[in-house]
Image (tube, rainbow, N blue to C red; front, side, top):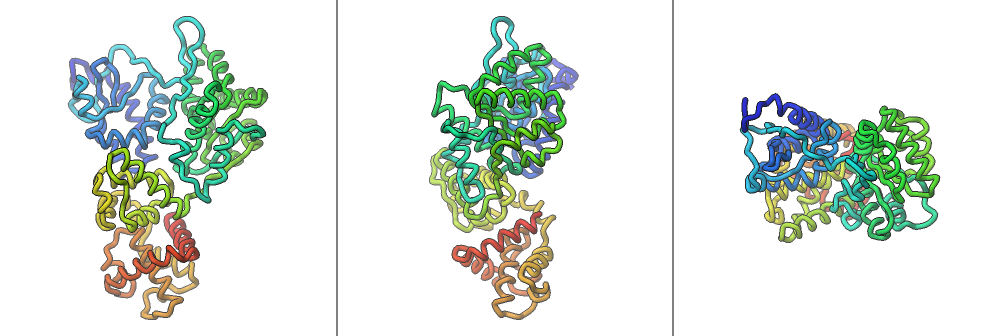
Length: 480
């Protein structure tokens, strides 16, 4: 097929780069988020020959920029050998700027000359001294200490990050923050970079992901600019590298990172890393580098508890409301549902809230629980496949040393009635079964019994920390 006079053969490389990125994004974001926000985006050629990822709406553009653009940029840089720059615009912005509409999603018109890239941190010069890195390349303004919500699961890591960013004496070196995807590591590293630059504008702060370190190093080797690459990184007063586990198995990159770390530490410079596991668990990373990482201060970030998740939702909702010009509030039962249901990561939690606001706008303030659940139903289907009412009954019975049959019986003594109510509450939160269906599965009870149980557990949670911990333990166990 021909578009704009150029064949699809010439556009295959860019399509291939985007296709590889989409494979990773679908896996990392999940089918629901990918389908809702990225599946309808398409590559286009701008009026100046630049490549643009075009979204059908401004809402989709904003969601991608907040939640996926950093990762898209990394994947594009890692897979595009020509180092072309990729921009992000809504369809309205793109067409207002004179861009060419393509015939179908995913189609792209390739330029004859590669567009220059600003992804590599150190660019090879045509003449003169090596180009200096962009000191804030890759940083996201929304990730700062003001928007970070501390709690029991992350307060130590938060305190360490604040201390490093203040340039306090007596610091540990290196500092390694670790935790699964979506636990706040990237937020902390970004916040440290912004704060450190604010506190000491004369000092050189360098932030980059391990993937960008890899792509920049490879580019430097290809362009015979390794000396400039080393010089620029080793001049940093504070070097922050996100997702260091990414260099695992890449021997030459690991060696360069090891020597960079050693040189900075010998000069008394500060180095901070993040990883998805503690250093001892990075078995694919070179033993020398792993040993150096283990020798510093290792800070783990744990899953956010219920109170912290609510705090994050309230802060996020207030921020989004102010940005959009309305009061950022929601009904308590809706926020509680989000907090109880999306427990795997903060990003998943924020993603669910973003989806509600994208669909409801300022009407999120009056959104009922049923309406919120209906909007989020695509996000809940995966949980329905994993967790059944039977699973919940078995887990609750085991937790409270009961028989599953007790939860279905007519017995009403508190030792059984309270776990039964907890099981009904969990069924409401973790499955998309209707209230009548849940009631039938608990010995043929009426849906009004389920409503009473859900309301009762919601009331008790506010005053009973033991029950709250029991429910959080059961949720984690059921969701694996």
